[in-house]
Image: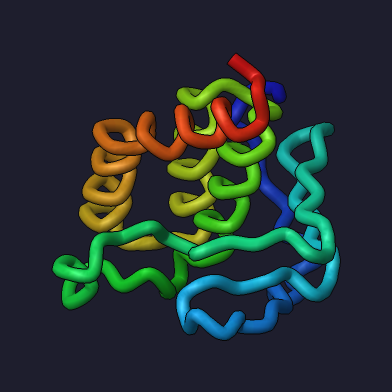
Length: 133
């Protein structure tokens, strides 16, 4: 992936389409979603499963798992699950996507800091699951 200082194109402004699964927390993507970051494309395939923002329930009053940051969270989940970029790069992309959507900078910093501090747990889990250590 290239420099993150350029404009991002969110699937021609289409909505992210998903179905909520029976656990009430996980969703399955039902229509391919593409994001362009400079000349690179990230394609979220049909069938990809996400929990959006992995926020512990105790903090949902301040940062719920769904919000204006849902698309960046799904893309972040995809990058973590696939390991297509480094963890640090995935986190930076997540932050940049939130900035592009004009999310409150304070909220971005809280979310980004939490991901940098605790994201290694999910990152390691995915690397073990996919045998990509």
